[in-house]
Amino acid sequence: MTYKFRIGLQPQWVLEGLDPDEPGDGRSLHDLLSLLAAIDATGHIAGACKACGLSYRHGWGVLRRFEALFGTTLIVTRRRQGTQLSPFAERLLWANRRIAARLMPTLDSLSSELQEELERLLPQARTHLRLHASHGFAVEALMQHWGDREPGVELRYRTAVEALASLERGDCDLAGFQVPLGEFERDIFANYAQWLHRDEHLLIHLAVRNTGLFTVADNPKQILGITDLARPDVRFVNRQPGSSTRYLVHLMLQRAGIEVESVQGFQTNEFTHMAIAAHIASGMADTGVGVETAARRFGLAFIPLVRERYFFAIRKSALDSPAMQDFLAFLRSPGYVRYVSELVGYDASATGRLQTVQEAFA
Image (cartoon, rainbow, N blue to C red; front, side, top):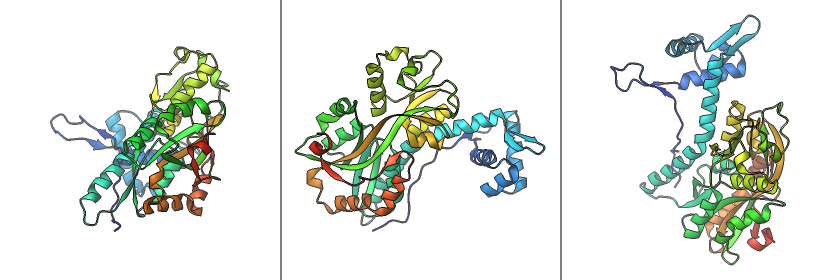
């Protein structure tokens, strides 16, 4: 049975404390942030109001109301130059983008968990494949395109190590992880080897993706490689402890003879590639390491470092189940393969290929 509802969770800004005598007086910034984003994109208020489905009068009312609340201007209108965001509004919008980039994978994971919990309480509850995986754009696309197909797919975003440990315990059916090609492959794979057993597991190839350094578009500090992270004028933003990208950066620094203590910002953490990109685009850091797709979506420059293969590990015993066969058929479908191949920096030529651990890591 396919259920008609789908759970979605979204972050929301609320201004509180506007009236100390009125508890629960929070005011949502949803309309304002949508309007500011549209003004930034269109360059004028009329087009922004139309894009947001607001009347011109209502849009102006939203702007004036929040200008009064913040005590500063939000837009600057110049003759023949259209409308621009004020520095305060620009910072507000970038903060919103950074928060969304940081929280959305977590909220997507929680919404998937909640969806499954509610469906279990309904008549004719459907079966689910449990997917634990490190965040990636091909995984995100999988969930977006899977929709209401049977079986359901329940997603939990985890670090690669956490995902493989979950597969070992029987807490998931598929575990997503990535390994770089080339000189760092052996060390990264060794980090996962205790959970990948040649006699018990198979690997489904998802994609190959480009990973490298992000910088602002014109790269004013001429950051060209991993050794530049040791420069005192370069601010770095890292992935969270336990993530594969953070471990990869550690190995690269080690190979270059650079102590992590000499990297300004090594202990500054973000939880997704998009959050890394937003952090840099908003001027809070000069560089970070992530997938090329995220850099391009934020208009950043990208300096390639490695290419990574992304896999789903499964138990051999699960391969012939109808649910897993349906999952494999979807991964190999022309529509999904085409979408992944269109992601900037992704190669989907082997998407859906089944391999043994020995074949993948000879």
